[in-house]
Length: 182
Image (cartoon, rainbow, N blue to C red; front, side, top):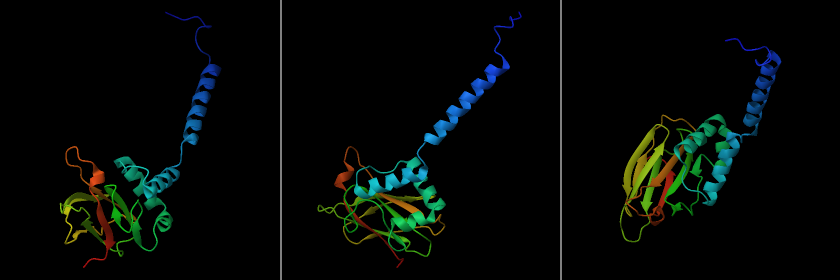
């Protein structure tokens, strides 16, 4: 069956449709928020304690931004390492904390102490890209977790209290610091 000439779209119409679709794609791409801006917003929200822990995609975006812009890590922490989320002299009551380690020459041990008054341990998961370890932090002595020196650097490290059943994470305060290996 042949269609009459006037029913088929002409070459000009096809070109116009392609140009309109390409323009819409270009505008959608340009209207997207740059990753660096998204990560900067996440860092401010973490520092003020107005957001929950990062999900896997956000963690990867944050780590990739640190690798792509090493000077960003310089702006996040004073010195060679530090805590970049809400804390009070290392005391974390939100159940999670993020640390930045600039190079493998920097302190490579995470020291965690439970701050619970009832003497119970806090179950923790410490992770970074390509590294994850679970353990418990007691009130005394401090629990020490060695970080790998394989990188990548700057390194984003997450320390998160694990939930048990319906328990809230807010009930698991702990003190955390990044220190030199003993």
